Amino acid sequence: MSPDDSVASDADIESPAKARRLALEIEYEGTNYAGFQLQAREPTIQGELEKALYRLTRENIRVRGASRTDSGAHALGQVVDFEAKSTYTSDTFVGALNYYLPDDIRVLRASEVDGNFNARRDAVSRTYRYRILNRSRPSALWRRDSHWISEPLNVEYMNLAAKDLLGVHDFRAFAPAHPADRSTVRRVDRWEVAHGRDDTDFVNIVCEASGFMQHQIRRTNAVLAAIGKASLPVGAIREILEGLENSTSVDSIGAIPTLPAKGLCLVKVKYRKPW
Image (tube, rainbow, N blue to C red):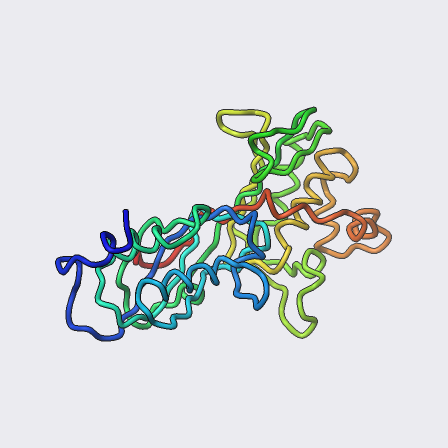
């Protein structure tokens, strides 16, 4: 598809020409990007989207994402919204943006939404998956979107420990970089650990919550992996959340390395009403 083929057809243009809000569902491989959020000197997902939008519309458009994924993290269902005066149809936005975007970022669908829609504020939950390749040898094929752990993991123990994360808790211990004057209380609806459906070499950790703090998922899953290796007891999560004194789990959490971002993927953003 050429740029002209994707944007120039009069049949693809709607009227009247006035500012309107659109939402996009996008997927991306985050290996080459310093996260979602715009940065001055580093390539980001937001930066690439805004450059593509400018090439299409010749408007300086600022996009807003539902979740600020980490540097190197991926997405299957990120949602962004923006305001534009362009009269191109939703389908034209999809085709033309995919022409201008690099191959590791793709727009899956687009829709005109209510002017008050806010991809971040209106989201009721985000679902993330962390993928671990658990076998004796690393992979050539999955090195970009999974974290390799060679020691056998006890998935049953990890899943049992993850149940202590459900509900409303103060997750300060799992998000030490979060500003001290801001709340670290979050509601977690789901945190499950299971082997891959079609390949038991993979261990998938899926979590859903109203929101997550920076590195919270990766630090929490690092503790779960330590439980899977029998380096920590099954009750470690509960001990850490409760801040039990003289607890080996509480004392050791700072020494457990945060899992790398490449295993993390934003799977879905949920809203009260479909957009």
